[in-house]
Length: 546
Image: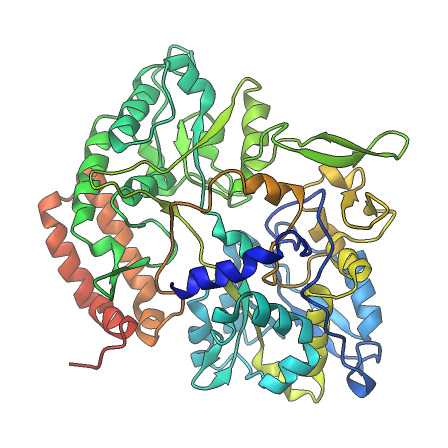
């Protein structure tokens, strides 16, 4: 059994009892707040979180869909508790890496350093912008975070170690056992008399019908079968993932290989090339499905250009009534109501109230392979900026704060850090204090947590037990996920990765659009290897230099 599934199996038993933690990517109205895994206590005496720090100014990066105001209520509360001035950097999530790089070039290093792409930990360590975090300080000042990682994701507890030193606290997301869904327009399928496809041959019939059968009924040939994100389902039918913001590796004959270089991709490209020539693929696929704003929205799907996609996570595709949730009535009483549509579905039905979506299984290819993109359990890292250790005691204070806002063993305090002020932003839904109901108008407000400064912490590996995750568990999304077999970057991947990804994307687009003949696939592989791919593969497999 590989490390990934060993970690998953260790996580699953806590589902029924663990506290639901926000991933930072979405709005939750209800969560189970019975934490059984984070029971360690805060440091006492001079290391106590109740002893105010000596007036540090601490710069902080976090997941953001909206900017955090300077006077945000939860930020103020954390500042008062720890006696610090918290400077939250408002870095737009869609442009996080580029905005962070600009700050670094200008000489500014965040004290609490969110590293969104796991392969960037080594890069930032090599740049000298990260501080080493002594293991004993982690165990002393962030005991609840480290306890959750050791107990629920032990395979990842040392993944932030570089050359024997600890530089990144692993952010392990338990909900990443669920792959990216495959989504179709149910109303289009119904109008065309088609079923959700299971094989690549069925898939081809469906997308041709979407392009040629006038599924929107406007009498104009203005619809297509799929765009960029849907192509990964086609690649998945041959066992690989290509279009991603990193190089996806797979394992063959006990060796790591790069999926985009495998010979079976030539056959996948043959399908896509034909579909593009036949006008079945959205000609705007080159610029992607998202046209700005919240990064998980497929505007091509929302606007009725395409009839299938594999973009966004399961919680971006909730339809009205998929499960029941808790809210308050006009008298302030907690009541159960059908859940409202979210994100992509909400935007879609606002434009077309009759639109419906359905999830499908990734289609199987000629050899029975199938899969859609899945994000690794190791989602990101939380690190400490190099300048933070220049002030005595500051590192310890940051770790205390991170532990307090991320994995607080007190359900009341933990809920306040994630949802805001009780009675204003949320209330307990029952006498057992196990579920939370978000109060109006925040229950209908996109990313209200950002606007009040909640969600400052990192995700810890405790499976959420709320109603949304109970619904997700029924969708079979824990099957058919294609994960990146290389989770931690090598030095050559840090150095050559951006150029190799650009080379891969340009070549694949050229093959699909017909600008480059498929017979040149072998030449592309040679170009890729010569541009640093050979070195990346050698290091990924731990082989010596030849």
